[in-house]
Length: 217
Image (cartoon, rainbow, N blue to C red; front, side):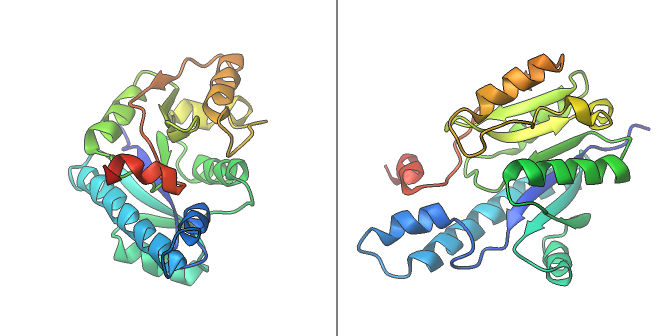
């Protein structure tokens, strides 16, 4: 029986002043009160949407679900994971997104050598179960799957169990994280490693107040 893939949701504890800082800064420039609390509330809503979509697939038996936590100590992270009904909880480590990704990939490389691995964030109001199913199915015949983001990054990265065991081919090195060239740079790195990634639906995530405009019309 084929082992289920692991979907890892990378999430920051939704506390005012500690999450969605760029959005909070934008909100703070408007005539609004409690910008930090508003940004944290939005983060919580986005998280619950992401977890609802992921949990549906978990309950249907398509995948196992992990929570990669930032902003909490180990005991608090485990308690949060239990409240969200995930199969396991791990901590994010590292100052940059690249470092955090590499740490998580190395951790799952050791703990789950026979499983495909997918990683997503929580800033995806239009995420649906078809998106994640498409990624899971793509990993059955591709080593790498990417979900492009409208801001030039990507909202999902998935590695096959074979690629997970080859860190030298992971396309996460020398990437200018946070820039508009993340996706293009990742594609070039993947191609240099001999990878032909499957691309799934492009989605828009929410980092700044301008990203909210499609949902305010």
